[in-house]
Image: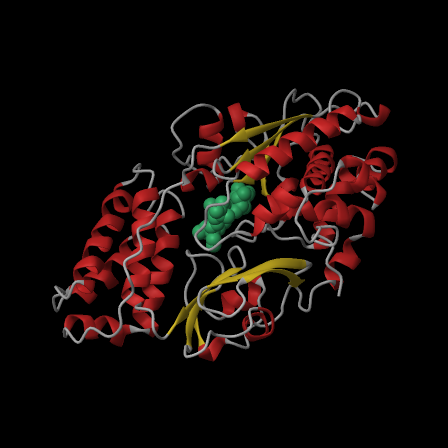
Length: 431
Ligand code: L3W
């Protein structure tokens, strides 16, 4: 089984130096692209590869790039890697940032060349200190070796790269809030359209891609679109970093073919449930996705199959719910996070999520009332797609609406004051 993204990650997770990285074929795609390929060739191979964005939405990368104007009169274009990984349960980009920084930088150089961007940023989660050190060091090495800066490898292509650390706000993972933050403004999302590809950072054409997405690019350029498609077991191309957290025997992160089943991920890789616990459900891709339950265990983990099962692949990092954990407490904990992380710009999100958190807190305390479930049902629709300015609130509603669907009895038991099992209310830490 090929694992291109993690093949050269050491057991102790120490990143390769630039020299070590070159010895295992690193920066070959930069040489190939700048010597033998036109920008449109890079765009074509990425489009043909069917690579989908790994940040959560799964938008086709080649299609996104195709919206960038290629008019040579445009003086500045930007490429930004969204490394503001803060989705609950999601810890996949961290591995690539800390342990494979040169792979990301290589992907950024080739991608920037493909869209003819001349300035690039790594927008990094503030709490990822180790990643910041490793990326900073690797950027300097790349400058010193002539892979960044002016006239890269004598090709005439110029690219600046800057590391920018965020301020620890989840909303900065939303690409237009990220752009505002990078411009020094309050991090509220912008209206789309215009999409950043046309009018992004400082009004210039800008591509924002996820860390895992851009780390795939060197391999696609080196080995081709067909090779990338064939890594997958389904029509959704490539490998994927899949994670599992919750009360399983061996929580962790693995690079596996796209399209493995939930069952395989859970049982073979995460070792199954811990002794004495049963699987009740899982959020397949971070917190802002719908629960899948036992009947879905054979669903293939790819963007299309998971959507057909009523959820989303999201970031591909699954949070597992067991039968001894309170569903109400589990969802209340997530609502606490989303309420705290709402940027406050639009009313349904700013007022609605804290209200939901209050209802769930009172349910958990045995103070629920008969109409509470109807209120919760109403809110999941009121805060759903199309009613808020960005995807934060609709994403937050996904675990709640699906918990109300699959585990309604648990909520009803709380109202009947037959409190089932409880979870210690975990204080949610901000970092
Ligand atoms: C041109 C159109 N471009 C969409 C582009 C758009 C963006 C990308 C995805 O949220 C999800 C969210 C979270 N013309 C376009 C177009 N684009 N339509 O495609 O856009 P979009 O709007 O579908 O999603 P989004 O707002 O970027 C991402 C979910 O991911 N998620 C959260 C992940 C959080 C992290 C983190 O911690 N940093 O990864 C997990 O599931 O809920 O639904 O580039 O410009 N017509």
